[in-house]
Image 1 (cartoon, rainbow, N blue to C red):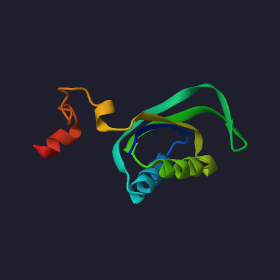
Image 2: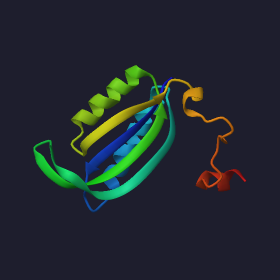
Image 3: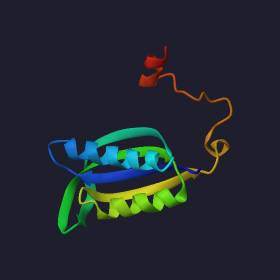
Image 4: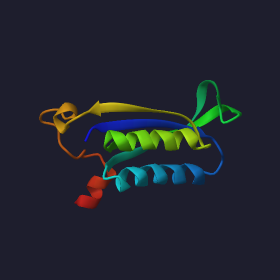
Amino acid sequence: MPFYQMLCITTHVSEYKHIKELVRQTATHVMNAGGVVRGINSLGTLTLPQRMRRHKAIHSMGDYWTIHFDTAPRTLRSLNSIMRRDPRVIRWTVLKLGDKVEDIAVEGQKALRTDSPLQDLIN
């Protein structure tokens, strides 16, 4: 399965409940299709580089987040259609990082980062 990174910009509201639900929905969709979610990161609320129009609204602020995952291309197409219809999403893009682990791994690099919060749970 190819390895992807998705960057998503969502509408900004004071409560992060809608972003949490969108991230959960995205991760669940990938996992239900047999994919693997490798990481989720929030980049916070940022001013958009330009005003963006989506779903009959104009936005100047947005909440940025990324998700790294492995999935089949068919699942990626259905994920794109979900993002297109969701009124919380302003923009998104998906980058294919590689087809195999060898494409993205650097020789000698550890599989787990030592500065990862998950490392504390393992030890």
